[in-house]
Image (cartoon, rainbow, N blue to C red; front, side, top):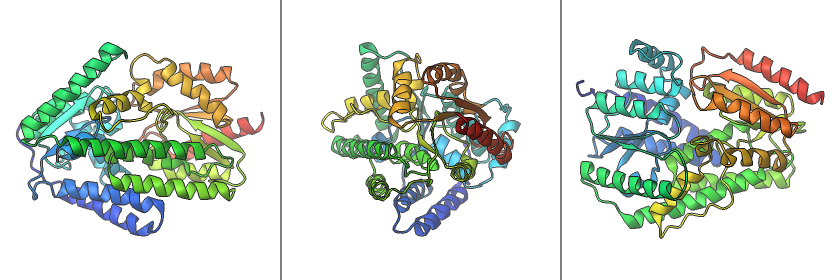
Length: 419
């Protein structure tokens, strides 16, 4: 396949305009730092070619601290595409483009959006690709597609299925190999002092997310449920960045003040819910509004936004710390055998957050979420916690409507209220 023509700067500029507007809109609020982090991210991506930057497209869960320490410009394939769709940039056209390429609706919509964006040259030209088998098995295919359409070299980060000493050695070798690959293709050399500084910053960020999650144990819980998504975005796109730390610090302080004043997402709070996955991106605000109407709050998401207390990164050992972070990241509990790494936090959260019910948003294109439901349900049944299973799609609005979500949630709330 030929080299893609880079006509993407208009799409990225559109994202930047959204981020600038939201940074101004939330001035003097925690979210201003969040949107400024994204604004800076996409400005660097848009201007990379003009500034002689080296763009590395990558898939989910790759440690972005490495890119920064190599002075490379990252392009998170899943979240760049998903944020395009989240802010209304040709979502339908991108999904249609993926269908023209032969991708059926059963494929994860996040990766169909990537394919459509690559087809439409809506993604900036990548100079190299890093993809992996974490956690989504579509990720390697999206990485390979980017390599083909952008005619660039790539590295497949092979994460071992089982954990243990042999797996730890394999991960360390993969980290060394991917750094050597990136140094070779870019001509940039690793700045180990910078990497250590990034790890120190990431360690602070993990501690702040942990503090925020602990504040959510208060009754009423102060955090709007859709903000759990932001914890993923800052880790996947802004880990190690000072602006991310400012966001989490200001959010922590804001929530602490609300807890001290007895203010919550809803007042009074009648139902405390656990989510086991993300709700549809395009319905985040709608779902928060429905929850608020019924005095309900999603107060924890153990599979996505939870750091266990034992994790402490050591800047003096940056690669070992990155390996530890990969193993401890809560979505990683769904990779490999579904064991106590995933089930233990589920039980803990029911007790710690005083959960009345759980919602499993079943993203139909994901082959990881659906098979876990029966196991989660059995665990929650033992704890006498009802769970709602809701088929949906993270991005494609044709799968589940706001009315359907409202009907299912209200029926579930009635069940919980009658207990």
